[in-house]
Image (cartoon, rainbow, N blue to C red):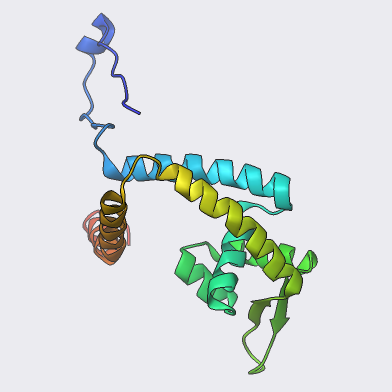
Length: 174
């Protein structure tokens, strides 16, 4: 969706101007907008169909793929806040979808039980259909290139964090 930039009014012309941000080509913005809209629709659908929200689905999906993990592992892998993971784990345990065990006496290991596997499979079917709709119009080559580029962006996150830290240091905010 291309943005439409309005013409400046006379009062805007005399006011100091901000630096321009090209919203049509600002990749972080485009990624956020796609993610926010896709996520909001998914959360709405998963709540109506399965009684779980998107954060819950992400935890279930992690456990469906990796079979087990700790809340810390789930949060780190997904980039989710500890509190959000904890709320989802608590909710999913309350609904009877996950088991929690302390095999080493320290960390709680989470896994899906039979009921959890059933909801994983049900949501997965919807999630894959939604993903296919998102990629509508992209051929196999474009899809492969998009995946490759997204992995490159993901790999650059440590560099982004380093730049952020450097800016914070320069501004004496750390």
